[in-house]
Image 1 (cartoon, rainbow, N blue to C red):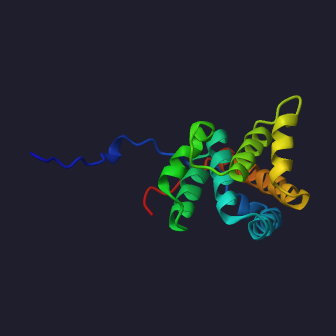
Image 2 (cartoon, rainbow, N blue to C red; image 1 turned 180 degrees about the vertical axis):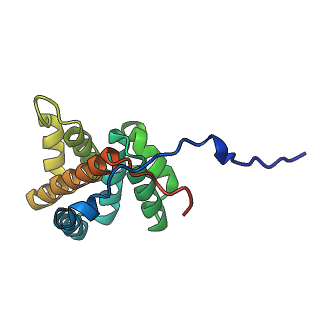
Length: 161
């Protein structure tokens, strides 16, 4: 006998947004959007989606994890790779360049007292040009800012898409 499980929405926790940043700081919000547009045009699309998803996971931003996983899947990214971003170091699905970008994402997102470790930087510099590295750093910084905006303002992902 086959049963169909339904999702009971009565037990869901409701997330109440705190503030619409775009409404109260429209120039600043547009500036962040402009930076997002810039890095999107400069960083390899696949790598860009992976690093946005990874930083969002590390930061615990449900809105961004939801959005970037759906965006990447819609663009044709393999769902196994998307799920594996959470444990990318142990997953065989990523190229050397992707791994270097993910390691850099981890280090920049978790920026500690001593900054980005030399071994992480050296591996990234071995596979990315200086211009590419500069754009990766801007991309990682941008997603971290988006995460901080969404988390601080309690921006929930949509329940339906």
